[in-house]
Image 1: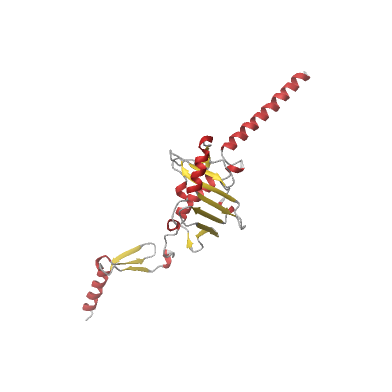
Image 2: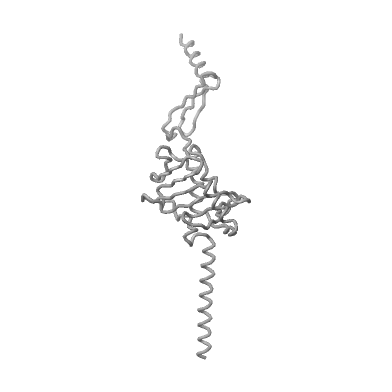
Length: 232
């Protein structure tokens, strides 16, 4: 009887150990466990500065200002473009480990044409650094390697059929906010748009509360002339 109990306890212990090893292996495959796969961050609030250094482009420096970001300390960042970087930093996952025979070629390619990404959290030195290489031949993943590591990985975004490199390989103008002026619409009484060489296309946009009305400027001029003549 005691022997049977011992065998059952031993079986339970072995089953628990096996389950732990399987879970550990599955988690490791997601690319978030080992130090040389730690490309992601848990939340963007952990970052207050991002520096992107491209071999052939001018470095980009993004700094957090409240809930927004500034580019090079001068320009507001277009959130619709910057969100593509945020998604990578938060959600990229390990797709597969490249064959050992291709490691040297991948590292050499990253060395000559890679993109370095430095993440800061308030200190003078970055808390995370990694390098982005080219997209894989199928175009559904991208070679990446952590700074100081010699093991490259192919990373991807679940649900995205494209590579990740292009999200970091943009000229500064693409990241800049496209707005020239930002005013709440209810504070605007009217907007006049005049085309010096095309008065027929010139117009005035007037705020009517919940709606806006558009009136061609020539019609306004015509109405003013009519009222002026009628008044004499």
